[in-house]
Structures are given as C-alpha cells and as structure tokens.
Image 1 (cartoon, rainbow, N blue to C red):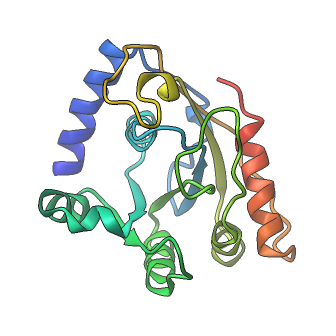
Image 2 (image 1 turned 90 degrees about the vertical axis):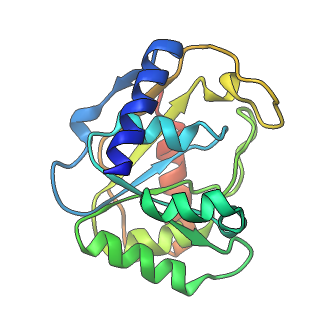
Image 3 (image 1 turned 60 degrees about the vertical axis):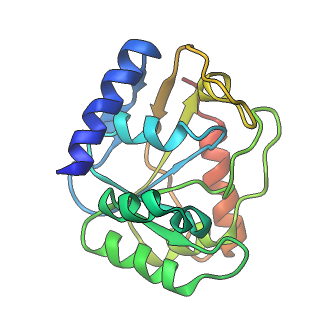
Length: 194
C-alpha cells in the first residue's frame, strides 16, 4: 500500500516537473521473477526506474542508509533491503535470491554506486553471480537526465527532462565467469539510448 502510494506521488512529480518519458516497457516480463539492471548516476535513479516500471520492484541499498531512524522504518516497507558494499554480503545475496524466486523483480545497479555520466565504473561480480544462479530474465535499463537533475554532490534539484529506456532481455552464457557476466550486463545497459 505504501509502495503504491509513494510510487503514485513520485509519478506525478517526475511526469509534471521532469517530463518523464519511458520507452521499452513492453520488454518488462508480465509475471515471474527477473533482474532489472540499470546505470546509476543520481539519487533519483531508483525512483525513476520504480515509476517507469509497471511491476513492483525490490531494491538493495547500502547498509548505511538503514542507520537513519526515518529510513530504517521506511525502506523495508517499500521493498528495500540492506547490503554491505565492501564485502561479500551473503545474507543480502540470499535475500535477493529469495525475492526473485518468489516471483519478484530485483533492481540492481551493477556499478554499486553513483557514477559520473562520462566515467564507467567496473561492475561488481555479484551481479553476474545472481544472473547466473537465478536463471531468470535480465532486463537492461538506462536512465537519462537524472545526472543533470540531481548530480552527484549537488545541493539543489534542476528541473530537466528525465527518461528511462528498458532494453530487450539479455542472453547470458551462464558458464562464463561471474565478472564477465557482470561486464556483459553493464555493456548492455551502456548501449541503450533513451
């Protein structure tokens, strides 16, 4: 209920203030678990992806966010669970797998953190591990405009157009090493244009 309410409010804000455009929504599976892999340049990206996608999404978020009193209450109620970024967090991986196996959609930002638009960080191999082990569709997504609306380190929001483009399912060779699968996924994300 809270997820749907906040998604609706976010939709109104993104649609009317940021002129949100969405392409490729037909590439989102209608049912069953899947992974949605997206670029990440701004704090607005998870919101933009959540509004653009017609399925309820699950998110991993850095553990530090759960230390704030309001966020520690809010995040679990909107399908967000914590991950320790500087280690192989087995409990977060198990939770991600559990949610996808139950038919949920999992958003992953393969680079693990916000990056500047021109520099691409190396993706985490955990993304490749999850894609190989879960054997579910992997859909690339590219968010554009959020890096101008709320750039890294910015204190104010700029009203600029935001778009989200969902690509076709990525065909993954599951016997590849996990870092190579992660790189393949990130390449598919980078090659999308909105």
